[in-house]
Length: 179
Image (cartoon, rainbow, N blue to C red; front, side):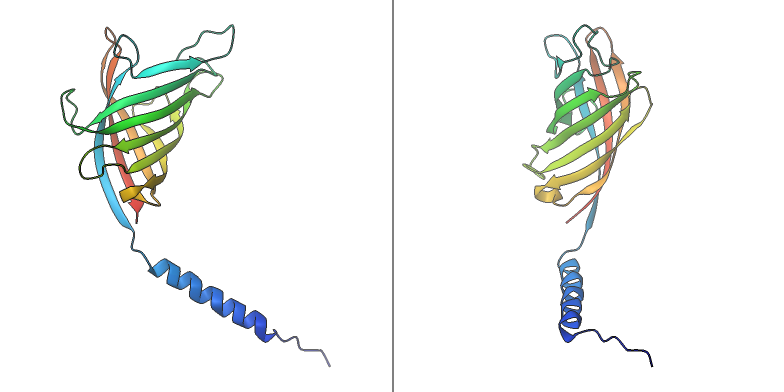
């Protein structure tokens, strides 16, 4: 005769408790989806620069296409593509040229909302950005305020560039799930 194993009552109670806890904690909030289009007003040089090189590999050229070059940014974000369009936030963070051939950067920055609707809320963007791609895609990995527990995707497309004043307009389409 084979012996029968029985699960002790304490293990069954613990499993039941965990099942109830998991199902009740998931029912406490309903996820919302938010879609928005934002415009980064980016100056990569000149007296109005909103992007600056911090450092790079000693003895190498420091540029957007040089491995190891680190940049900081504080771009104005507007509701429309025009420079005088109402400001809705700031794009603040860092970029690192992260591939040996200079083709990719790693982005890590916050969209910090300053408009009335989302004032003080943030979305956290992180990931690889293929520099010469017409549309670049990064992950939304978190958020605060109105965007607590955000996750989603952000795409970036340069829609205007003026090399004489180092100015570009970057359209950002964001889709996030949040509570």
